[in-house]
Image (cartoon, rainbow, N blue to C red; front, top):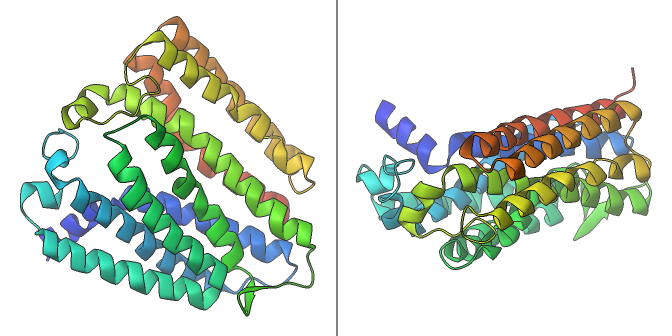
Length: 302
C-alpha cells in the first residue's frame, strides 16, 4: 500500500498538483469575497478535490505520453511508469477516472469552471507535452493551462446560472477583469519560472530531446530573454491596483518581488551560470503563493 501511495504521488506530481490547487483555492476565496456573499466552505472543499483530480489527470496523461523519455532523465527515471512499477493501462485508468470525476465535481460548482478544466487537461497533456520535443514555443503554449487555475477557482465561487454566472453584488467588469488579471500574473510568471528551471536542468532535458530554453541553448540570447521575462514581473504586479482591487500592501510586495526577479535576472546576464538561474528559480517558487496570499488579505476586512 505504501508503494502504491508513493507511486500515485509521483504519477500526479504531488507538489506541482498542490501548488495548482493552492492557486485555484485562493482565487476561489477572492471570487467569493468579491461577489459580496459568504464563503461556502463545502464548495471550497469541492473545488480543492476537483482541482486536485483534474491536475492529477493532466499530469498522469503527461507521464503516459513521456514514459520512454522519462527513462532517459535522472530526475524522472524513478517515476512509476519508466521504472516499471506501474503499467500504462493502470496509469490510464487512474488518469481517466481522475479527469472525469474532477471535471464532474467542477461542473457541479460552475459550468465555466468545468469547461476550463477540460480545456486545461487537453492543452497541457495533448498540445504542450508533444511540443516539448519540437520547439521552445512549448513554454508559451504551456503557460496557458498553467495560468488557468486562478480562472477555474474564481469562477467556481459563483453559483451557476444556466451556462453562465449568477452574480448580483458584483459588477460585470469585476467578473471579467479580476480573473483575467489573476490569469495574466500567473501567465507571465511562468516564463522566468520555467526558463530558469530549463537552464538548470538543461543537460537532463537534452537527454530526452526537450527544447525549453528560448533558443534551445544556454547562450547569451536565452539569458537575455530570461532577464526580460524577469523585468515583466514588475508591471504585472501593478495590474490589481490599476484595476481597483489590489491595495498598497499587495502592490509593494509585488514590486519587491519583481525587483528581486530583475536583480537576479541581471546577475544572470552578467554571469549566465546554473547558480544564477537557480536564484531566479527559487524566487519563482516563493513569489506566487506569497503574492496570492497578499492579494487575498486585501479582500478580507479587518
